[in-house]
Length: 246
Image (cartoon, rainbow, N blue to C red; front, side, top):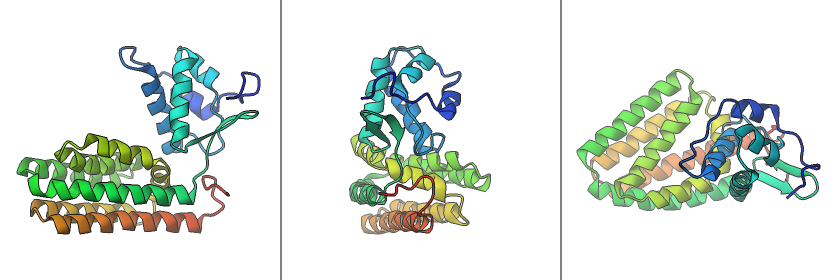
């Protein structure tokens, strides 16, 4: 880890993002700092190459450096931050191979999740998923893309929760960090949000009929479409500011 003198100053956008943040001292500080920094990167508030200065983050949040160091290490483990011993810590670019690997992991885990959910899902749970889809549609219609992605994740997380597979979703969530960054970049493209909603409705229809095979097929089609859209975006924007060149 870089020393105090070699670390770059805090990025203006991160400083703005942290302005007014109050941490809850009753829950682990590192988890809160992790969520803040990860969210800033995933939503593009911190661009690739932006400096991450642990000392200044700690000062801004009025906490010790230890929970910040632990949080940054966790974000780094997800491939969102690169640490250079002599130069400092910076937001990483998006790596195509990491995006593809994330989808491989996600598809495998979620297919198992939905197969189990199809046989036990209740009418009440079906209605909850319907509500999530409707909220997602409103967010897309109003071009609230951060909210649209949150509702998208909520839909998938809820399905994992039907069988209390919360650790499964946690594994998916950790693995898809680079994927999430691409989603925010590509979602404003014409029809992308509407396509996702239509595919969610197809998934829900299969779940409502308790058809495991159809549910798995609908989910796989949805995730493979998402991967295809993401790779198309990356191929069309090879010199984009978020795309890693190596």
